[in-house]
Amino acid sequence: MSERPGAARNWQPPPRPEWLASFLADTRAWDARAVAPLEAGELIATAVRNTGLEDFGAEDWREPFALLLEAIDREADLNLFGRIWTRQDLLLFLETRLRIEAAYRANPEIDDEVIDRPVFVTGLPRSGTSILFELLAQDPQFMAPANWEFVLPCPPPSAVTYREDPRVPRAHELITQPGRIAPTFQAMHELGAWIPNECGVAFRMSFRSQHLAATFQVPTYSAWLYAADQRPAYAHYRRLLKLLQWRNPRHHWLLKSPDLKPLHYLGGNHYAMLDYVMDARVPKSAEEYGKRLDEAVAEQLELTKDAEEQRAEEDFERDEFRRREGFDQ
View (tube, rainbow, N blue to C red):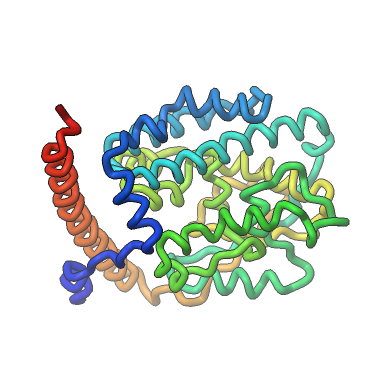
């Protein structure tokens, strides 16, 4: 075992940007749950009210949506800004589901679209799959989904206005927000509206996404997710791809999945055919893979323990402040 897990004990989160630290300091006496509620029924009702639509499509998103919200409430310990940001994202996912179904009702021919021979880039995390994905996307025979298409896919993009779509600036602001909240994140992963992104980002609309599990400290949801059937997520993803290619035809979709599930879930009647590209930087043996996995898990456990200890200290300081200022009386 390497020394990386021990080194992880010395890790400290970078300081927050000044604007965010000031916001949290100025609002520390606020009731974050009341200001930014994260209750399933209220969020669903708000999405319906905002769009004037009611059909969310298949019902298989409701269980993971409820589980995610329960885990966020009990385990994530979000501050006020975290709750506001989470509420914004969840409403966006819900409203996008509603708009996708509305587009299908208005244009039932979308469902006749054929996803022909999509190519999936897959491989171990942090092994170079993103740069391989972006490199292959330069081949004119492929079309990779741009980040903005996952964020604001409705109305369906048109080939005529695709490069000048007026939604791109807003999508870019939403996509790059993590870099403004945690500037060091930009050193890990480039963000932008036109950068292609992986399937898991779109899976957020099905609430069966590793991206959601990684965004929050929600072990209950994560445990459910890793044992759950992912076919509903891929089925909705296929529905999204049909929508995106309806008015902007794609010769072959180039897609990225961090695991080999598409080879299992997307065969048969889901796609005409599919191919995949495995990133070349894979372990030479199962033993080496197991060693890397053990090291990664040990490091994550250390980081999680550190985070829990830091959270306990922050909880104590917050409770002391509220007691001293009389907010709990």
